[in-house]
Length: 114
Image (cartoon, rainbow, N blue to C red):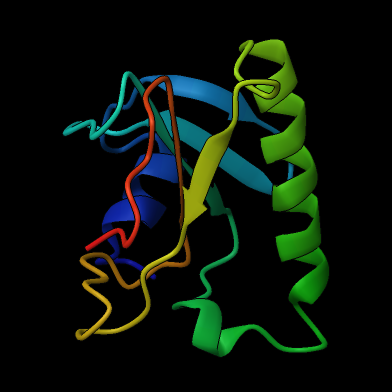
């Protein structure tokens, strides 16, 4: 999608601080971190949100969660714990209409979250 912020980041048109990349997904640090470790993992294919996940594209989501688990181990926060968040739609405070998962670690997370 030509006007999508995350599609532009994936394409390299907008700079980002890359955490990980493969043929399916791209991970980069959040520009306004809410925890000592805060990065986003996005599919390279444009999927608008969790509400647009289907049987045809759900393997992308499974792959992303495999990568999140791998990165949690590699970056050293898996044992202490972390939070994975995906906001959906306006009421859910989704600010970019491209499926993305926030990974937050390095501090205690409060509940309820907001």
